[in-house]
Length: 558
Image (cartoon, rainbow, N blue to C red; front, top):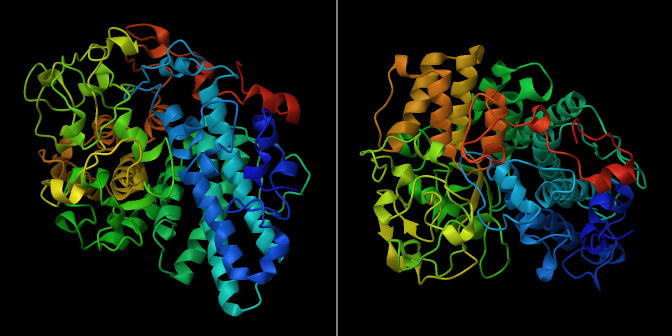
């Protein structure tokens, strides 16, 4: 039975992604050299092959496939990269972003939030998440079965650490599966080889995911091992517990604000003492999203580790059309009409694919009626009316770029210091396509805001919530709030301003009760001024091929 990235090469990838017979087994091939590396070679150098196979899991969170060959087929390979797949589902249909290219394609309907069971964006997301779940399960079973022949205490300790990380990654995937698809197949170390994982009720998947991640966090705390750059540790695992508990009311029908606060406070306390006002946050907002940001991750070398888990981007070693590559180039473009140049962001390529919806833009405090300048450092690199761009979204046609929304640029290819200064010399020359800027999947700033929300819901200390939110606001260069300023409504907008385009928005709006109705943005539902979504749009459909082959029950309304 072949490893996933050898097996997933046919048009039936989506259907096979749901079947453990194609996802688990003896790991008789690993992607590093599928022609020569088999399980029979593992005894020759157990540590080498343990490291290789484990690294392959993280590789599949970073890239779309080895050697430029996408592991998931039947649609654009770059679209199936983990971060980009999540971005497509969380951000593209929301008020924060869109995708003005490919409006005449099946995927293009995601911009309007109109998705059916054959939509390539929703299919890519499901396939990527289930593929990565399967890789984690496969690794765990291989360790448990003794396939690596780990015969020393040191190797066994390393494998135990790797297994905790693999379990954390599997649970991270289930967070997104719970949010996007609801009732999904559940696989863990006990899933029998050759079986089709049972489709479980959303609340049961939530229960199992939380229980397993709680155990992972407890064991990681007890082990207290240092985190190697590029991998993950207790901060990332516990951050996803916060995300799960914050959305408990949606996922299982019973809110759990107290546990959200408890785990958020654990993370916050571990980071106290460094960075902005001793908060653990980076000194400057923009440096989180520029070259050199890997130093702010666990194992990155800085005492400030705001980025709790990052997707590494190594321009000279791996290729990805997601992550920072997409977050820089997809948001940019230039021509003689508009006062913005690719060189302003230290790149030489721009795709002209993403703009902002007007309702999102107006959430920020602008200095003028035209929304052209602001003291808020979080819009520092935007292209606005000051650059000739229209704030409105008259059409989402790529040929009308410049007339269909601001460019909400967050990531750049610059090295930026604690004071916000660009170091052009250290940044090097502009390059296209692949960058050495890591993508933060979860940040300490999000944990501060999550504590605040859960506290306002009754799970924690409201005074502490205000202190935490003001770290965020003051770091952005805007006025701190008073007690009267902080409400659930104002906090929702602050979370939007701080975390925009970081793969949270759809989940947040659903939790707020503002996704289906109660809040409208341009082109929501395919209508220029926006309209409510159908009631079933809180979940994406399971891919039709999966439902047909595995016999799973489709989500309501699809």
